[in-house]
Length: 135
Image (cartoon, rainbow, N blue to C red; front, top):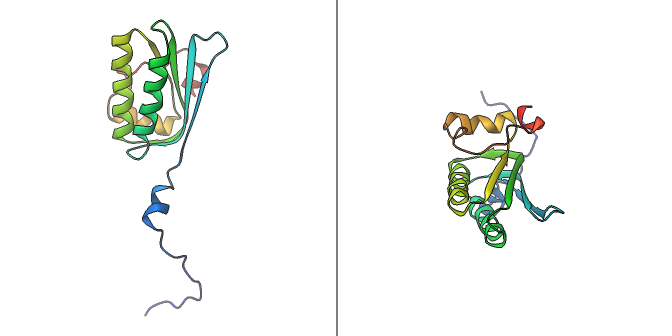
């Protein structure tokens, strides 16, 4: 016997609305000493956003002299998929070739678990001295 309900359901999401649910915010800032550039990534780093992050990172790389450090702050990351992991691995490879120093600030434990499951946590240059990286 079906249960009767007077509650109306919201209309289904359109494709555009569904894609917009996984919002990503980027904040790019060069430190005062002009030798370190920080790119903070907040939200979901996935197939829908990885290309935007990569484009901004390549812009930073092109503008930074080789001896400078680029920090990707992942502490605000809420989700990462294989596209985001691939983008970070490629960024690490580019840094090794160009002599930029790349440092990743570790995301929350829940998000970091994706790095561990895919076994890329040891391949990427996470800042082990950052006290928040052990949280």
